[in-house]
Image (cartoon, rainbow, N blue to C red):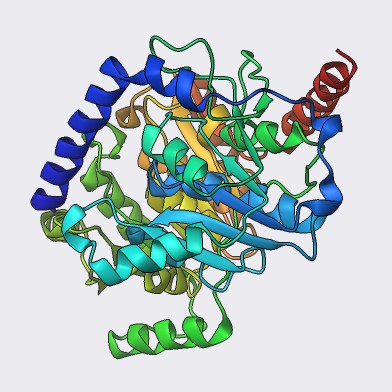
Length: 421
């Protein structure tokens, strides 16, 4: 991991050098004339390349509704996606994707054979390239889109490179709406510019029954009891301020075990072994411990759980994409922008914007509401817990679908306005 970080840092420096010293030249040399969406011959758009290799796992999963929207709008098109190698597994077996182009961020992973294969895929007749530059704007991604030789390149007008007048690699430029918006909306706003949308805004990762069964077998070997109420707890997060105190995870597990005989499956990420050890200091039983594995195996393990409790991290989006109910503890990040969309996925956030503001009781109460038939909480206790939410300034974000639909309606109005201009 350290070598990858160094390679990332080196490439970032190279990219920054180009951005600072050569962007004006690139704009003069490669700048495209902007066209209106109405001038696109969509009947000739049969090969679509989506690029999102420049952000993290959660950012990519939040963009999967774009893939769904494209498949719904272009059912017979060949749809490819450019992703980093370490989350390419998320689109494996996706019904929305026909082809995966893996871009290695670590230069050491590139062999001549891999480079030739990537170039062959990249130059295989893409009609439209779509750059999802919502969180950051990558020059590398823009260059990949450019070298694809796609007739149309679609991207956002947002995050223009310094010294540039516009995002010149694109000839279809989606407007950026400055109002507060969910990240899924931000991604969809780009394809809404060409009239593409979907009613299903949930994240997606297809896990088949064989994968779920294989993960279940591994869990059974670890003393997992099929059919018993099971809560998975992923205790890690790359950012320290996104972590709920590990002791509270342990106390919650003990509470669930004592009151409901819940089976606890403990997950953590690479380099977080000490978190699992610390967790066990707060329990009087041994949880089922599942060491770090591949993204697909982790998602398949989640599918064997009734719900997941986790931090605000990429794992939260992985569980949501696998359609597993979850309670996520948020700190500085705003759930209105980043929580997975859907009433199965609940975000808890305190008014101090700190994970420390969330108590064990807050999460326990939320699990009871998320799984009312499985975690039964008495009416009296439920009322007491509800009062604590108000007293402590805790917001439980269960479903934002109505506000999302309102924003979609506004987006369509904005699209219609843009088409008339």
